[in-house]
Image (cartoon, rainbow, N blue to C red; front, side, top):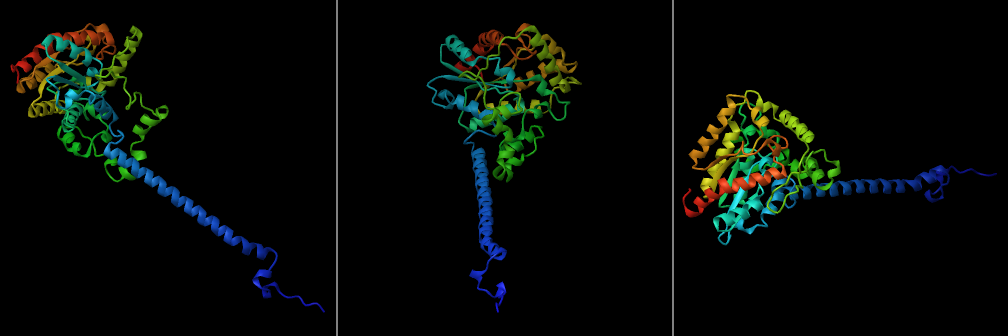
Length: 382
């Protein structure tokens, strides 16, 4: 008589059927689970390490991510050794300001003209940046001195729209993104009346999540096709002296740009009153120059008739007396060039075309900078 033995009585290795398959598959499933967990852990570790390395790169400025406009132009400036000392008798002249100066002053041409006029070498560089109002200029001037860049003379642009005291926040706040500032600059900016909050990039998130904190800068530098910025941060078509030549525009293009400019600064026109953080920024830059022994001058670049008319009275008539008072206090010359050029040289009302820059550069050097620098060189100016 045949005896049926329950499979549970059989040794483990002799079991057959579904039970045996299940027993053999458990180690395989376990190995797969452990492998998946290891892959996730490894991926997380690599991603975290990459984030930390990127944070280190950003904080040490090995790759200029926080403020590429400044860093890239500083690299260009360093190609002119006269600004870093040991200038072999050169007079070094630095221009600071916004895009109005950026595309208005051909520093290479003006340096050559002044060298001929003064009979001594003059090295000039245009260190202006798009959107850089008086507070940004004050910050950049301090940075340059810390970096060892000390010019003999500096021309500081005064942008009347950035002097609008009645706006809140000040107009410059829309341009100066918090991540562009260094931690030790936040107190200065606050003292100058610009309410810039401390960016999270200055804290732990700047180390563990820099791809998010610097996403705008990373896309602009490495994947500009995905960037939503109208103008690139990491790339400007400057010449070796920092000047940008703007192409000539048709009347239709100029008309469209003027309308955009009017809307862009619309909050500045209403009840315009010069003062506030803009004046504090100009004052700080003048104080920095005086403390460093740098000859300083103030400049308002050309504006069209229409652009000037957008500033309502009585604020419009207060601009020159206010800037003149600052200049007098610091014994600095003030060059008011708002009415120097015909309207056709100004594409949007306050930015010069290439032809306009040529005319303005020649006149500025001949009538203003030449006499001023001659007095500085001979000891006739402070």
